[in-house]
Image (cartoon, rainbow, N blue to C red; front, side, top):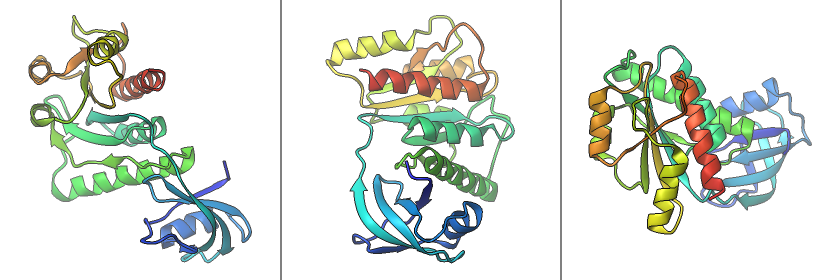
Length: 251
């Protein structure tokens, strides 16, 4: 993979040249020290990439000359992560790791045990920050698809309204939770195919409450164990997405 990747807004027509935003220009030229003649991959976050040459290294309006464009096929499945808000800056890390693993969408949730509550302007700034983290992670790992970070929702309300998924999973510490492999095997046996759209909810510190787990089961969520050890919520999110992605890629 070429050394330099930059984000660009989706062009309306196939571009000959691409002028980068001031932020992307500064990062490419001042931070990464790209020079004229260097190969740069520009991508729009929706699967389109352009292999380019840097021709003007202006720090606020760098210009790329397009050599050729390409469309990257998406993964044959979509994973949405519903993550109850953790304390501190752990959500930033979760968003980055979810992007690296290939999550399609990230949904921050407020649950009964969530200790972080964001309203109004603070919420908008956090969503913007997490979306930026997703973009930065996509540039670093070569993911041509940037996951969407949705507005914060109530966990219970989302459980009750979540539709359009082949399979809805919720990480659980409670007795009776099943392994992911057994849940996927049951789905494949019943549907004669692997799931294409999967939702996985991961709780906050202390997990979802018994009432929230009961609600999830009432609306079709499958409780899934992540093993015998109690994982921190940021570890649980990465672990859950990793094993699910692996299983779906090898289904």
